[in-house]
Length: 214
Ligand SMILES: [Zn+2]
Ligand SMILES: [Zn+2]
Image (cartoon, rainbow, N blue to C red; front, side):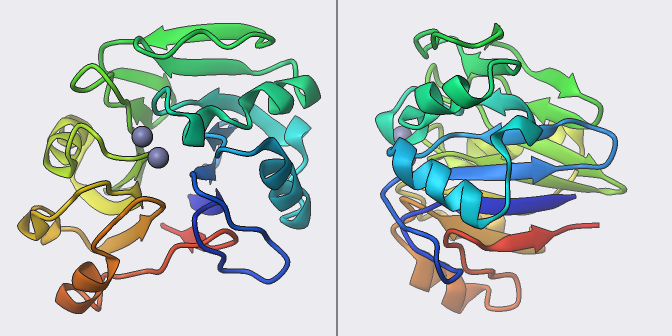
């Protein structure tokens, strides 16, 4: 599988724009391409998608982690460009207009083959867990429910191998010691601490970063 960071507070690849927020593309063989979150600003989202050669019509479904503006800001204009997608939202998120179908997620759920939602945790946010072979990649928006809770919930689907996304307020660094790959993005406050504790696991984020996991 492949995770491409489309929108982040920092830039990794030349020509892309940064902005407060998060969005990434999840590609897995045999499943539709998933747009996970949409950043804050629709112009930045669409600019970065174009630079990454990513046609909005190539997206098969959208998953919104939580209702905050820095994750939903690009959704409405994206749905103008692609009216055929289903949008998975946690129960606490207002229903977006313009989607072909809106699926409200409360409990853990397999959204397509090998791709799972943790369900809405702590009444605010869902994360995704993508299974490939023996490994499980966890994708988080802001991690408001707590990284420990997200990883615990994801564990019902397999053994977490990688974690990609915003780790807001996260400082219980022991909780990620068993992961093999960690890519802290967006609102993560303690990137340098995570990097110095786990240099061999650390992958820097930024718009344009591509992570391949087998
Ligand atoms: Zn948030
Ligand atoms: Zn956020």
